[in-house]
Length: 455
Image (cartoon, rainbow, N blue to C red; front, side, top):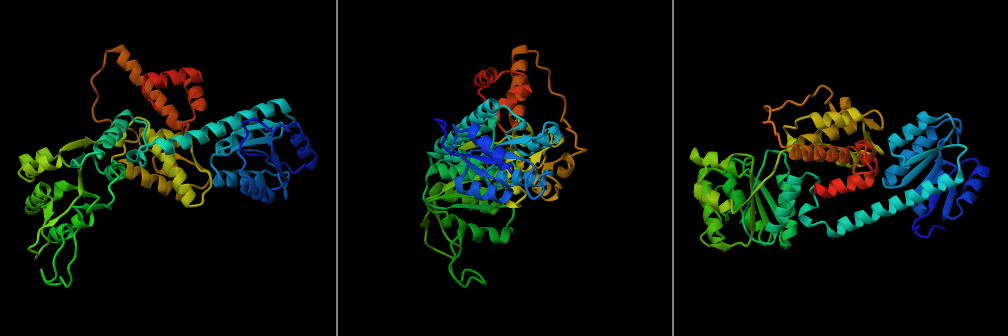
């Protein structure tokens, strides 16, 4: 058994003589065997192997690859992190490449050199262990404010760090950004990082009619108006001890702005129809896609309220300005929806990745999420294409040519950063594949990532 091996090796081979030979040649590994798809699934669930070697030709039709590919997809659906090494015929390169596209780690043509196969299995075990440790450390050290934030973009990472710092205070935070950029995700992250014991309560000021918004926010006493048959607490009281998010604060009616300002100053409310002041301990986070300074100049938003809600202002960049994030998010959503729809291990084709990178995403992350969800439902195979995404005819439409930067160092660093982020997004963060795509060695790529502060 390998000194560092923590999980067994699963050998799937229907030829029992060859199965025995493979197990004997790999006797330094703790291994279990299976001869068909059903027994392989049982062994996989029971032993949870880190690495699998498998033949594509399995019973009941060993001359076909259908059972092998079905097993490959099922294993990756159970554990997307398992390393599968496919053993193929000498002239079966097409099926080998198809297996890699579906998520296999590597392939070997029969007959193979046991020493080379052993080295590949060793490397697969090491990679599995490194990735497992990396996931464990990320879960241990990743701040709560960033737990729902999927990004490699430097500006978004800066936003995340800012949210972490702000979470420790009770300052009112104003999140500014286009619709769909993830303002509520950040607000929830702020709440989680603050360790406040109460609830996170969100209310969209633009979605509730003006006549109902006051009672939704402040609550009302029994008999305060027709239909008020019982005392009802509002959203502000519900969030006592926690965080209140006022989404689309720019749409708050002017009369309510004065009442909200009074609450922010005194931290006390009066329910509609009530006479008693109620103290409320709540962290307030506001968000809007509108230009509040412009609304102030148009006298549609109170300037004194602005300075109350904007103690800390966080500007969230749109998705089109976040380098590499569109593809990174698309792959994350693809895995999530594929699991929900029981579609197995879906992958994006190269033209799909290119179209995602080129699209401007006016609806930001919300638009991307809906596009990927639709594609998972509509895709006919294990590969999601640009046509499945509905982006095949989409071209990047710029908003005017930028000024030319003549500083070669800045231009070079910007180009290197964009290329590295794109390669990492295309390969799902796989350093080996990214370095191969970029035409540099892995140490060189690590050096570049360190110099450019790419995480």
